[in-house]
Image (cartoon, rainbow, N blue to C red; front, top):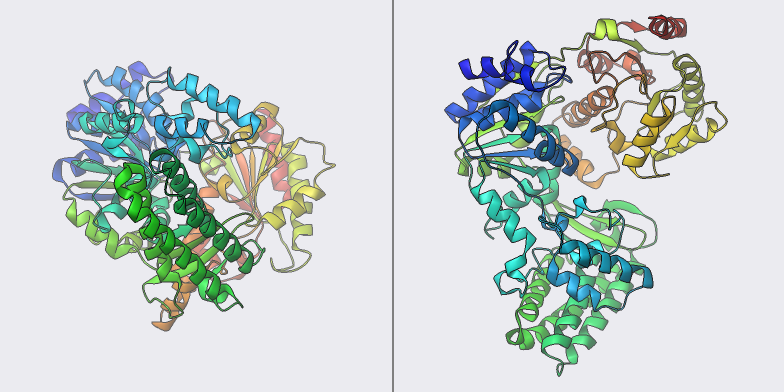
Amino acid sequence: MQDLEHVFGQGGLLSQHIDGYAPRPQQFEMATAIQQTLNNGTVLVAEAGTGTGKTYAYLAPAILSGQKVFISTGTKNLQDQLFNKDLPTLRKALATPFRAALLKGRSNYLCHYRLEMAQGDPLQKPHYSTLQELSEWSGKTRTGDLSESDVLEDSSPLWSKVTSTIDNCLGQECPNYSDCFISEARKKAQEADVVVINHHLLMSDMALKASGQGEVLPSADAYIIDEAHQLPEIATQFLGNRVSSHQILELCRDSIREMEQDAADMKGIRDHADKTESALKALRLSVGETEQRIPWLNVLEKLGVKAKVTDLTDSLENLADQLELAAERGKGLEQCHSRCNELIDTLAVFNQQQVNDDKVLWIDIRSSSLILHATPQEVSHYFQQWMDEKPTAWVFTSATLTVAGKFNNFNNQLGINEADSKIWPSPFDYERQSLLYMPRIPVEPMHDDYNTYITEIAKDVISHSKGRTFLLFTSYRAMHAVAEALEDFDYPLLVQGSASKSTLLEKFRNHGNAILLGTNSFWEGVDVRGEALSCVIIDKIPFASPGDPVLQARIDSLRERGGNPFASIQIPAAVIQLKQGIGRLIRDPQDYGVLVLCDPRFLTKPYGKLFLRSLPAMPITQNSDDVEHFFAKRCSQ
C-alpha cells in the first residue's frame, strides 16, 4: 500500500515524471485492488470508467509485484501503445528493474522462409518491388514485426505469402530457424517479467490447450485482461472449428511448391492439387454469389451443394494419399500431408445434415471466398476449465462490463463463479461537461422515413456544434443514406470505407470541424480529445442483427429452455455497445460535448430505462434550443 501511495499520490513518482499528471482517487483505489489480487492469487472483475487511468492502475502493480504477468489487450494498436509508450514511462518513473516483451500472433511477423518462397512465385509486377523492399527491411529490423514497416498495406495479398501459420511453419527444421523472428519473440516472452499480448493470441493459446495440441504461451503468475468486454466474442471465434477456401488454396499451392523442391518426380501431387482447386471453385459457385452469413444447413439443402462438398472431400483425400507417399522426402511435404488430413476431418463435420447440439454450423460467403464455421454456442465451460488449470491471479477490466451496475452478464459468459467485483465511475464531471439530447421522433426505427428524421436532427445539431461530430450507425445502409443527404453540408464529410480508419481519424482531428460517419469499429477504441469532437449522434439502440447465425442459435436454444433471450442476450449486448459509443464523447477533463440518442424506444419501451440507468449522470433535454445554448455558452468561455 505504501508503495502505491508513493507512486500515485500527490507529489509521487508519476507526478514527478509525467507532465500534467493529476492524482485520482479512483486510479489509486483500482491499483490497490489489483495489488491485492496479485498478492492473493484471486480473481477481480473491475469496471473503470473513461478517465480513471486504468492502464497505469494495472501496469504499476504488475511491475512492482515481481511476478510474471501477462497483459492482454483488445487490439494490436493498444498493445503497441502499452509496450512502446506506457511501459517505458513507468520504467523511468518507478526506477524498478523489469524485463518487458511484446508478443503477437504469427501473422504479424515476417517469415524469412516464406519470403524466399514468395520471391520465387509468379507474381504481378508491383509485388516484386514490394517483396524486394521487405527483403531489405528484413535485414534491418530487430523484431520482424510488420507493423513497424509501412511496406505492406493492410489489404495487401502478400501478407499470407510472407508470414507463417501454425499449419505451414517448419519449426526447428526450417532452414531459417536461427533467424526466426517468432522464435526470438517467444524467447524474449519466456524471459520477461511483463509480457504484452492480445486477446487473439490469448485465445489461440486456450484453443490449442483445449484441443490437446500444446500451448503458445509460457506459464505466468497472473493475467490482466484489458478491454475484457471483447473476450467472450473472441473466445467464441477461437474455440470452434473452421475451414476456409483460403486454407485449401494455400495447401494446394504449398503442396505444388514443396513437390517441385523435394519430389519433382511425383507429378500426381500437382494433378490432385489442381483437381482440389477445381472442386473448391465448383463449391464456391454452388453456394451462390450473395455475400452473407447463414446457417450451413440452409446452404446444404441447395441443389448440388452436398455433392460439391463430397467432391471436394474426395479430392482432398486423393491429394492426401499422394502427400503421404511423398512425406518422407521433406518436412514441408510431411506438413502438407498433416494439413490435408486436418482439413478433411474438419470438412467431415459439414458433410452431414444432422444438427450439432453444441456447435453452430454456419457459412460466411464473401465476394471471392467462403469460410465454414462450427462455433460453440457457449464458451463459459471452456473458459472456466482453462482458468482452473491456471491457478493464477486474474484481473478483467474495461470501461464497459456492467449492465445497470451489475456484472452478471459478463461473468456468466465466461463462467466466472467466484470473483471480487468493483466499479470505479469516470472521474469526469458529466453534469458540467455534457448534455444528453433525446429528440422527439414520431416513428419507430423500422419506418421508411426514419433516416430522414435522423438527417434533419443531424443537420440541426451540427449547425450548433459547427461540425465536430461523430455519427454512429448500426448499419451501413443507414450510414450511406444519411451520408448522401449530408453531402452538400458546410463541413468536411468523412465516411467509413472511403479511407482507412486511422486516415479518417487523422483527417477528422486535423480539420477540427469535420463530420465523421461510422459503424461497428468506430463505436470503440477511438480517442479524439479536445474540441475536434464535441458531439456524438447515435441513430439507434445497437441491437445485434438477429440474422447472425450464432446469435440466432443462442436465442433459439435459450427460448427452448424457457428463458427470455431478449432480456438475457440481446439487451445486455446492446447496453455494452451503447456504452462504448458514448465513451467516445468525453475523453479528457477539459472536454465538453452533446450526446444525441435518436431512438425513441429509449423513452417509449420498458427496457429503455435499463439503457438509461447504464449511462453517466448527464443533464437530459428534448429541446434543441438547449443544445444551441450549451454550445453557445461553451464557445463564449
